[in-house]
Image (cartoon, rainbow, N blue to C red):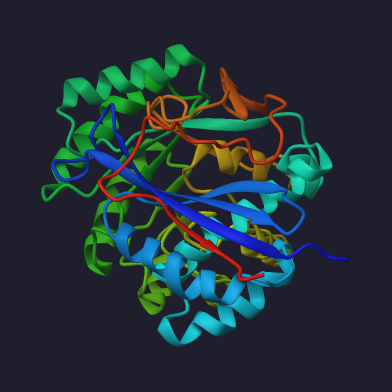
Length: 370
């Protein structure tokens, strides 16, 4: 008999950042999700959001998602589509998919633990290592701190790095990127990320000046919702365009890819709804010949990159992995050495959060009436 979902529990967690991502981003919000099936097997997943929506994500999990999922087959790919259809009235993405990711990840973790393997091996391992690049949320850093960070990346052995741009004064961006390129030398890759700060005209002008520093890509140059402007920008510039951390469904990814708006997509596995839709988006990118580089969440993204054919860069934000933040109760499922990342043999997803981390609210558990 197929095991069903018998219990879903949530726990809110605040994780202080070692390096604030800005004056208003000093910690990360995580909703840990624990799922138990009718055979007593348990899996753990999480939903994640830096600043906005954690309470709403948890409420969605504790009510709409739990109400629908309890008693259904405890298998991620079997649950995802009917659950998304059920929730669609409340929105196709955003809070909806971020909340769905918590349960999806927990079900993948449960399945991998039951099989006695890592999530990478459950999906189907393609590589033993993947390439990581150094990244930082650093637009607010003074120039000397940015240069020091770039120097640390070089010393750590990274072959490519990514730096934030989008200052009100373009000359400041030019000065900073010039300084980083000088630290990196001519042979390391340099990407820039505007985090949606420009309009079309600003982006064309800024990229026109910054392109002189041999850029591998410009990330999120425009508001993520504006497909038309991305199409027009890509027509006007030579630097490859990367985006996707703020697209939430495979339908939006398909629209941007098919419109010719993007060279490389960066799905965030939590924001798109978990591993199940991430793999579909990765297949879509492969079918269309578009590059793939998972966004953030090193412990999760690295395991997914290792399960995909081809080479996919993995983002390593300085001092921001769950392990670096001291948030894990068990050894990290991944390890970075120089410019590569590999798995460490942890079963399942391998992301268990410390019981010493908590938020003000208590845990909530929902159980199927049996």
